Image 1 (cartoon, each protein chain N blue to C red):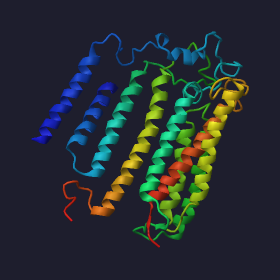
Image 2 (image 1 turned 90 degrees about the vertical axis):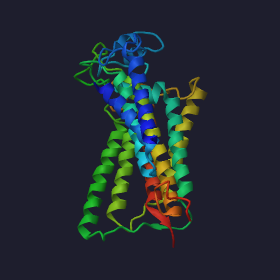
Image 3 (image 1 turned 60 degrees about the vertical axis):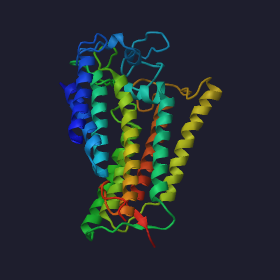
Image 4 (image 1 turned 30 degrees about the vertical axis):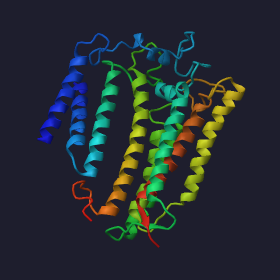
Length: 111
Length: 248
């Protein structure tokens, strides 16, 4: 089920990217798209009744059933890069607001 | 009309994803993954280069990769070069934000309200707790969930708290920049030391110790703490850039 939820999030994000005309809303759509993709990648490695892939004093052997650690490691990378792109996008949005006084793309360039 | 086209395109994409992955032999259903057939099992068994030692918490010594947290083993050991690239991406992004928003003369953005005494003192008290938690998470990255990236983000969030609760507070940006460059350079130097003394980039030169101890896994806690400091100072710099504006 989680995978369908992730696909719905990806579709929502793409729809927002295609239709929204407000810069902040575009950045939020980008983040929704990214969260959906991250959820989808993590769900690829899920095992029913699997443990988190961390050895502790209770789960202490490599013969136990762990979930796949590789998608989680890749998503860790993806989250950080998402933070970077969001910060850069918001910085551009702030600059645009300082110049035009609005976040709406349609109202720009009338000065 | 345009919205309708976008909706059609989105639905088509969703249909395409579901139809492609629905009855695909190479894509197992949700929860039915067999990890033993994947390369990930080698990461869990710590035998990417061959050998099949038992991995037992509190006993195993001299494993191929020392952290008890398998994800840390992948991020900071097996794919450490990849993580170096990732840290570079974050660095370039913070550089871009500083280029767009930074400038010579900066002053704080004015808050809509006047912070009172209790808010200032309370935020100072919380600042220490959040900072300590972030440092704890970064240091224990090889044993528990978390690591350098979440820990660094928590350090930055403690700085954000001070910024939001006090309208005159400004962090010492120069210190953050020096910390950031020192941590990034140390990461590269550790990699080069591995190249010179161990044969390839970012090789683990120190003893791995016993799986599960705080002082185990050789270089990996050092690298993760460096990543935590770098991420924390970078995101704190981004926060400062967003909460200041050009002026006197």
